[in-house]
Length: 134
Image 1 (cartoon, rainbow, N blue to C red):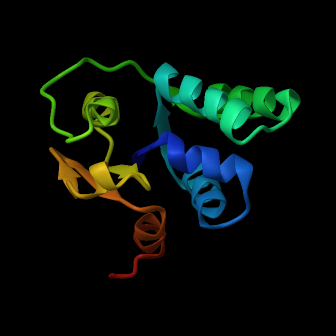
Image 2: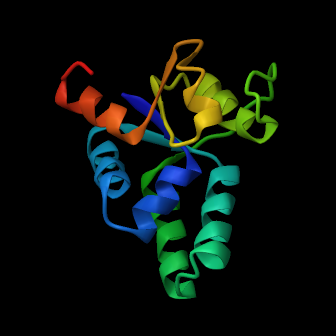
């Protein structure tokens, strides 16, 4: 299964213990995780500036993403999201034919689906992995 994990979930996974960390680890084990340079740059910036993680930890996180995720480019398409800066997540999912976008972003979650891609929260993806209905 191919999944795009939004930067907000990745940032939370590296910054704290909790559902985002568990989902990130489960997705890495069970799925092909698709990311872009834009996501990596956003993760790097937020972990450094907003979360204030030590630079060594930020570097380690970025190296992990580069090594174990599938770095994919995307083509810009029709703007769908009400927050224009989130369109790249939809375009990445579309270009990679991802089955899921995992996000905490309400501007994306409200869409529920984009073409063939289901848009779910981290908890929603947990239900997908466990085979339970919500």
